[in-house]
Image (cartoon, rainbow, N blue to C red; front, side, top):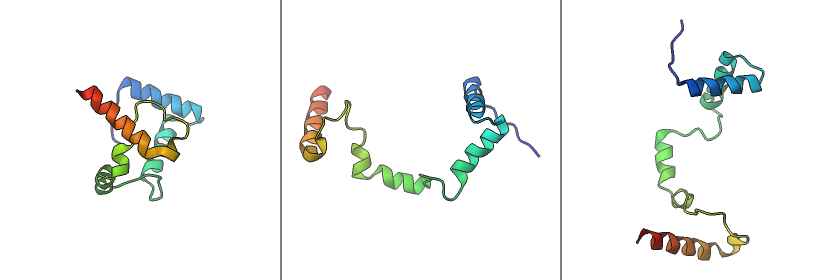
Length: 94
């Protein structure tokens, strides 16, 4: 039994390109991708509940805080760098 799945032309082209890069048919590439994201040991496979919990973590919330590359040595003065970035971003909001 088979099913039909509608995807955009752009998505189809991307899948075709990925299949060619790996020397696979389109079906093989889709099978490999589905296996990679559905296998029990797939990396970073979270349940919706786990994703919601992660999204509320303080570390996740500051992950996108910085607009620019971090300065060299930022780890040694991370509190200062975070404070400077927070002040700069809030000043832009005014």
